[in-house]
Image (cartoon, rainbow, N blue to C red; front, top):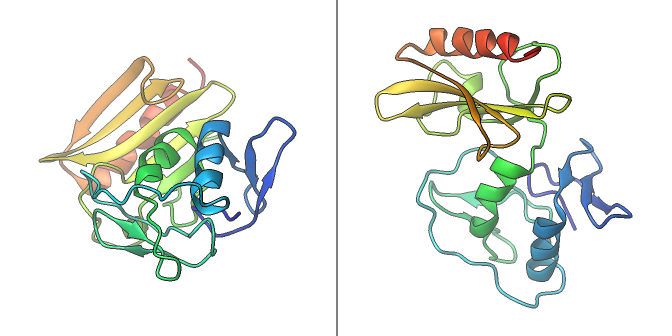
Length: 190
């Protein structure tokens, strides 16, 4: 099976988790079991129900390793025609994978787990999930996103369902990265 985030081979650990051979990112046992059920064993067809949010980034078919087609609210393999829709949210929110298109943040301890490809251009896609980071030693996550009329930087303990440690809002794109950097520095030690 292949990593849905980068297309590299997934290797199984002794505990049943899958590890991306390229980045060493873990895929949880529950997601690994569901991916295996849909993309390896073909015991069920993955849900193709359109998502309630726009999807960005590059996605790869866990069965074919080819880049999947993304049309805002759906991610589908052009070869085997299976959908990744039901896995997008848990992969982004709970299964961090180092990104390759992230702007330079460089705050010690924080690892970029998702970066919308538009962040490498001058004009960003205005969507909820733009940039996500994880601090493994302190078990914290941070998120930069666009919410209706402003950028919001959020920091949580544990995962995005955990205790919210900070929320800072701005309407300026340049200030959004500066605000994110400030929050990461503050929550690198506390």
